[in-house]
Image (cartoon, rainbow, N blue to C red; front, side, top):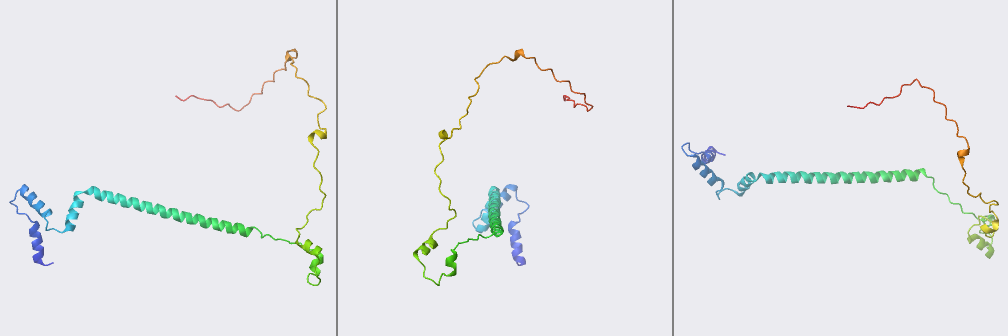
Length: 189
């Protein structure tokens, strides 16, 4: 800026000392609300006139920042938990030995499987599931009534007895005194 422009700016805002306060206010209002001013300066004056808007925008921005931060932290925590679960599953799989399946073959077939043509009986034996038990199937057990496990004697009938005829037992002897002091309970005022 040149000196001329600076002096014009200063003279625009300078008020003569002889003016009254009402005249100063009128001139300031005319300068502030004049249509010749740019829109950005009008926006700035409106922002200065409404400070609650600045407060609202600040609080709103802070709230949004907190929401984004908590969402980001939750996502990171979820990813970390999933990674821990995957590592745990891998360690469990590594610790368990692999299953070994044994398929039994008849001894006669293992020696000459390709040398001789196979008969129908041998093929049936090959494709049939293995027999783990050759025990004979037994019939159902007898019913409870046939077992004869009923008690021989029925319980004795209920009778009332009078125990007042018998002498009462003697009272127990007193306990020996102990040397340890007993705790005292004191009431608080």
